[in-house]
Image (cartoon, rainbow, N blue to C red):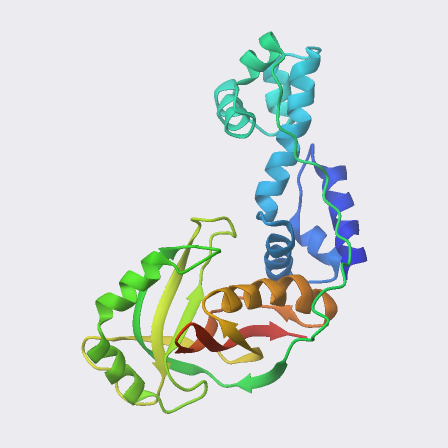
Length: 282
């Protein structure tokens, strides 16, 4: 998998001054567009589109400093329709505008070409199972929150607090399906950088009628990879997310598919036992 992913990275370099077609990259990598984007984001720490943008601006930066071509020619070559649009993107990455960089030969930032290598980690193994599930009906409440990599997510904490303990207990009483108990569903994630937004839904799988103060969410029929972990809260859960995408997927034949991920967490003091459901295809 990593060898084919690196072939896709080489193709990006070939196509930088034209169209970088994610469909072509996914075909080279032997996976789907959706899974390629999720896997790349997890491995690289930035979305694929952002990496391509940075590589183009790195190339453009070298040309700006060389002084051989006009700034407009450079802008057009790297996909910008005007000097103004190019200047904004250039300054966002390099910290200075192209004219200032050319006049003062100020240092610029560089996005190096990424390659992926296998690092042997996770020698303790990862516990998982594959589950087939028909359409699920989830009842609860949802919102949109920013992504937080380390520590508790304040927006989620405030949202759940706003639901209130009595309502959460009513939710739990509705649960009559698998996965059982209160679930945290996440989906429609913009990217993997801190602050990128995603949808969050707190609810339970149930066949019962939804109370008037709760919403109904339908989760399509899927094959699920189900992972379990136990340890200090919340670090263990966040590490599980990381390890699933950086270790488990590259080592297995499954690919993630679009749809909500579901997390069930049982907290006991500073420790937690968690079960993570991710929709996959083989």
